[in-house]
Image (cartoon, one colour):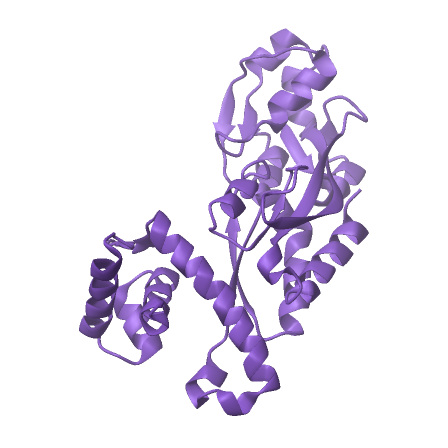
Length: 298
């Protein structure tokens, strides 16, 4: 039998990031939290939490935490219909749903959907950010229960819904265009003009070059892990990059930003994938995500 009281302690440690904060959440002492974690690890014969700042779950600890996420969702629904079963502390605790999305969705449409969902429910959201090509791995690893991803193939154990495509424009400031691309977008010009790259997983600039110039080039780049800062850096002439249409359409309209090649857009299809175990109970979340996405995306 699973010791659910101990699993709740483990979940609190991983969610809060420390034994001390977990103790506050559970109204016990830090030593009591440490003892329960140690007893659980001894019983299972494996380390569940890597002690540090913050404390993080091991792979096995993470699977136990995701199980507790599912249990918490079931309990929340049960207590809603049968409040007499719950203690007063149970009714006060709110369930946090771990989900993942890509940075550009978070910067454009995802927050609207998240706000609409949370305003109509008691759930809290723990939103993680990764490249759209990598968020499916968060589902596979059990780190989240749902994710916005570019993976067309359904993740095992998940339901998949098409959301639409996030459209990108490749832009730079007029001054940057005049400085580096006065003779057009050529291989020589791209070898000299600094690009902006989100992180090592960001392949959008390379994909744009491959699609419109049919080449694979080694280009100079600034590393800048922020969707909003991409726009700001572009406006200030720091480099060229691909930006979500939602973030640059006004700047394109006013001429503050210019497309390197007019009409050379990139469309990235996105999908919502959610764990089948909770999909029905979180249908409102899925419906909200789909509604906002399909109204916003291409």
